[in-house]
Image: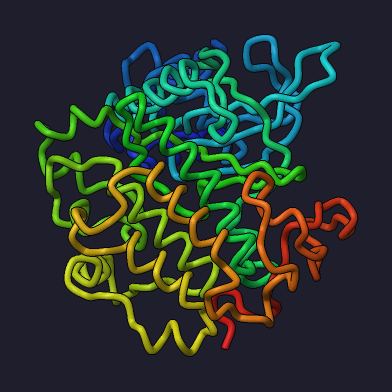
Length: 397
């Protein structure tokens, strides 16, 4: 009789789509005959020998849902702890023996090893990060493979996503939100100079370090701007539907940096207002709203949004991309111009720093300390530029 662990392995391979029921039944029958004859041959060996599933897949499934575990090695790096997980990959903090500095190791999930397109996309992200160097873009270091699964090493960012911060602390004050936007716009301007479109700008892909440096991460959907001109609809309608531009939602081929600017506008809206500008019953409904509906002025007014913030949101999220900022640099310069003239605008005193003009060379350095802590750290661990609005996060009344 097969051992329970062998039965679980066979069932998992079938359920996860790595093999067929018929192939597993044949392998189990062969395994049973070997046992009856007194020969010790593992089920894994039989599955691989009979071509029922690749060896790397069998090893991953045998591990169970834990897949890669703390203490294992990826190349010469030891995996210390899991720090993030998405649909395609798992990210660990890791360190080489004797090193003091941590790195991040991103590993493709095992069920995607046989997916040629997923592997190619993963490797492309690694190669892209390895040739980029900008203070607001996560830096790639090396590419390798562990048990058949590709992984790449990148800088470890000691911080949290701004999505998590908003969920835990409520919305950002306007100054702090613009500070984040300007750093990400700098990152997009750098990508723009390299002919790259990110295509998935959103709060979950923006990390805030403890020293308040902002990092744009996850370039898994990034592509050369020139490549979108000949892409099919299935290639251009990518990204998270709540944040993609109207042209992305419509599947237009010639997506460019103005699409990233739109997504950054949705991100700004989300972290200042505390909710998404467009929602719906399903992805198709959200995409329809992205294409057809404009921002609700009454909703923004009800959220105490200042006139200059309202202007930025309208400009960044214009349905016609010709009306949007035409480059990230134009966005940054426009924000700086408004900050310089901030005294002449009706600015919400409830969330202003109360210091009048802001030093544009060191944005918002005079903001009061954050009202709340995050990640279990005390307020003193956060520099003084950020102020959160309590009770204004997603789902809050």
